[in-house]
Image 1 (tube, rainbow, N blue to C red):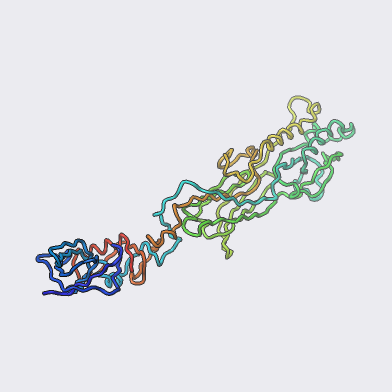
Image 2 (image 1 turned 60 degrees about the vertical axis):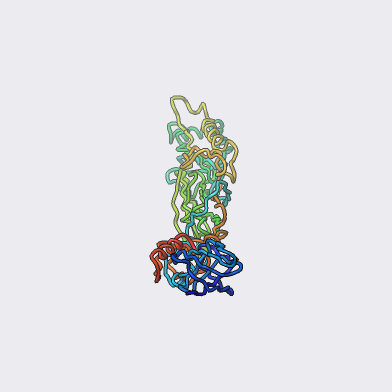
Length: 447
């Protein structure tokens, strides 16, 4: 019994649910016996057969044309293969499935590793200059003497001094009159015993000083001034902008961030902790007595939400050895200055690295010791190293979608869709069901 066969010249993808919508050319055909309805052969009487797609009204199935054989003039054997995606389009659209990738519904925050990373990268810096630090720093002279008001040292008194003031202080022992020396000997075995400690710190003196005053050894006031230390601690906060170059998952997987903290070194920051945050705040607290530096690092969102990232610390104090051995220290009154000057020269020698500290070859990694600050910049720096993918995720959207990760009705989607563990229910053969599920898990175009 001859039944109609609808035929089209139709352009579609193999993994597409599209069906023809234009007018069809119909032929009354017979099936060549015997044949499978998965791969049937139709006998068609026509002058020509310029078609590639068919629907057999006998079962409603759609077929790809796989072969056309001319039997004789006006008679053709046309072989086909069932198109399960078009034949069961309604069943596919009514299926709920876990959608891994979708062209229509997706989330660019989901990591998508289908695109490879490339080797080249770019680097961006954000920096801030704390007022707490000074490349010249200052020397802290601790003496036993009358404390006076505002003294933070208790029994001792502390003065902040420049290198030239330290030289003048050392030279003072040359010119000190005999009466002053006698008064000092009433208090100390040697006048130099009035010097309790000398150390250098890379701090800004103005954060601790309370004004110039004469240096007092015991009860003897010298003709040398120093900045009286009235503050032990200093605190400030600097902020840096967090760079988010992509605004998608690559800001975590393809971006490395390193924070440089003066005197501490390089601190690796987890990009996942900074995702969506806009500002990095570094609270700097210094303790003059021990030369201590403590950093508290926070990240803040545009809405003001704050995330604590870590606390880091180190001592930047450089001790200047001052004391008396077996000899008479009065014969070497410049010892205090010479030792202090040598320490200063060591600390400040060399070329400053500047903003490109991370891009160059660091002189140390991890935690720096208190004598490793030579050549180290005093800026807080955030280095963002960006490694790109072969193309942007959105560029592949129309070809293979973007990450979705949701259970959805396939009828609510269009374009590229790839599922995981699809299971479509059909009133059809087992092989058809398996082929549909394999298509969906491999990626199809719902059209």
